[in-house]
Length: 157
Image (cartoon, rainbow, N blue to C red; front, side):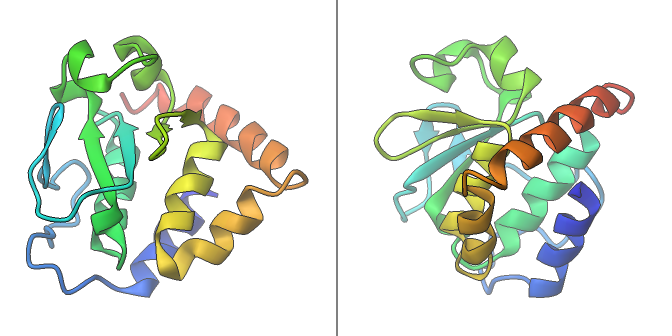
């Protein structure tokens, strides 16, 4: 599933944002627009994405999201480069490293498959996938797949 989504994002093409890294090597993307606790771009993000920058698959997927139109709505935070204070209320560093997390504009948190659904809904070309993923029928299936991925992910960390 993860490979399919990365391939789908790559097919959508990159945005015209000159700040996007074109280096596609896992982990090679640069932190853009975020210094723990402080968003530095001119566009105000509506959603904050917390990801494990030490995970090559996670980093590659985030690099692809950054290239898609609408990525300026997302603030990407590499948890490995951030201390616990930069994560905000209700999210510990251990929890953020264990699963993908998203903080919505209203301050609430989503994790796992629900976090991916939130991300996709912010990206115009993936909004349809986000709505489908967030449906009560599909979300539990995606969550099961995500939990299986988490078991395998340990091999790459």
